[in-house]
Length: 127
Image 1 (cartoon, rainbow, N blue to C red):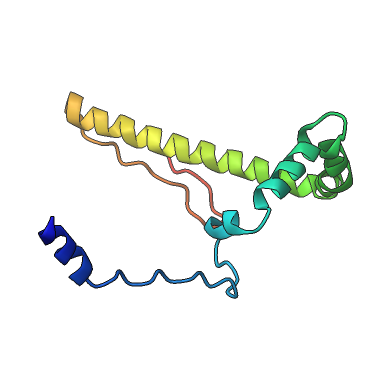
Image 2: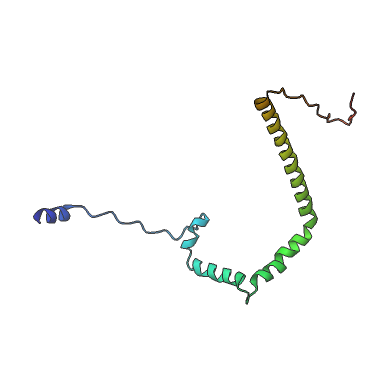
């Protein structure tokens, strides 16, 4: 008992805990929950967007998203078309590479040298 009293009274006090600095602005989104009333603001915003009585999502879509999409519809269609064509070309390229790999390693066939069309305007084939 005496030992416990001596150890606890002679031990130095713990260092003080640092006080938070509220003058600095948050540097990333991870610190947003520390923002006062953040949870309530998020609750009210999401409730406004989701609840059918408020129809906030409809208003947001009709006011901002639909006009933007209507204005840029041609650009969006061109982008989707180019992306589809690029994805198809890449998929076919890797499919051919996989088939050549399987032909070489499983069947023991030599790869066939493919003649690619020239990049100039000349596309004639000699036969």
